[in-house]
Amino acid sequence: MITAANRDGYAAANVAAVIEQAGVSRPTFYEHFADREQCFLTAADQVHTALIDELRVALERSPPERAEATALEALFAFAGSQPAKARFLMSESLAGGVATLDVRDRSVKEIAAVLDRRREALAPGAGAADFPSEIVIGASYRMLGARLRRGERALGGLARRMLQFIDHYERLIGERRWASVANHSAIAVPSAQRSSTLRAPAPLPPGRPRIGEDAVAENHRLRIMFATADLVREQGYTATTIAQIAKRAGVDGRVFYRMFADKQEAFSAIHELGFQQLMASTAGAFFAAERWPERMWKALGNLTDWLEGNLAIAHVGFVESYAVGPGAVQRVEDSLIAFTIFLQEGYQHRPIERPPTHEALEAIVTCVFEIVYRELRHSERPRISATLPALVYTSLAPFLGVRETDRFIDAQLASAAP
Image (cartoon, rainbow, N blue to C red; front, side):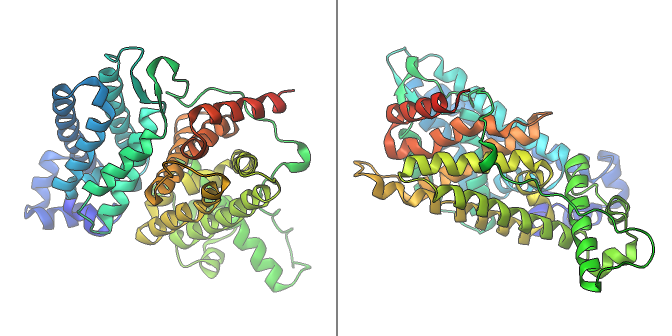
């Protein structure tokens, strides 16, 4: 299963592919597993168990003041020595739907809990990264998964640079305030600045349409795209069928196939629309402010506001985007890199004794992605705008330092309070 999923993706790692790879018969497969998903989940659980066992041993052998460094070193060492298993857990598990995402997130949570328990032995005067452990581990999974998909094996340098990134958030253990994504109230965006909510056009009235063929086609295309987003949010990409999409959109199957070749193409279309609109909203807000910190506050404020107003499209982009295949995964990673443009100005804001590395910018954006992902996945009513302070802290602290970033955020929250 690990080999088949890594080679062709979750969708192609069916029973036929697995038994061919394993050299066993179909009846033998079903002696052990009820279906493909159970086999996948069992494999992912076994990889996670091996990883967390290695991490526990490493943490027990190191002093608590090196807990963060030890945990990340062990994580990256496992990926270097067991690349196929690491890729399977850290990357391919993002593609399988609700159950496999649960395995991935549980793995991240358990590793973060082991790290946090080891850090409890620190004295109040010791230093530690003031950053949520689950976000650090989740972002590390994403960064490692991307490199393992590309066939990279020299991961020691990335581990060192990730530790340098985490060092930017260090402060006394007794002063930490960002050990979890703070439960702030949702930030109210002035009505004149609120992002628009995208909606499908109304169905055409029965009978001969009074608009041109191009307008009819665009109406059908958009309704199919939004129906795809709604269904994917409700039940996941893998469980969604073209018949369900056509029914939700109010069109028949022939209309669907005139607009899109398959489900993947419809998904990609709504994903691309969401990315374009989100980038436009974020960039517009960024350039409306004068100083860089205020630009980041406004840009991330618009980003969280837009996502909260378009939850189905946000789910497509942040939760289900890996399920479609290699092309979609590359599109996600390209979009992450695109958002680092907003961080580049931090280097010119003022001289920095230890400027963040290029990988630190990638880590910042990946942590932002992980924070939003977790809010969308694990909240019945996602309040993405409430994550704005955590997103701003993540983005600014490597450039301004943790204390100045705290003061800036507190001032912005005070001015935004009713």
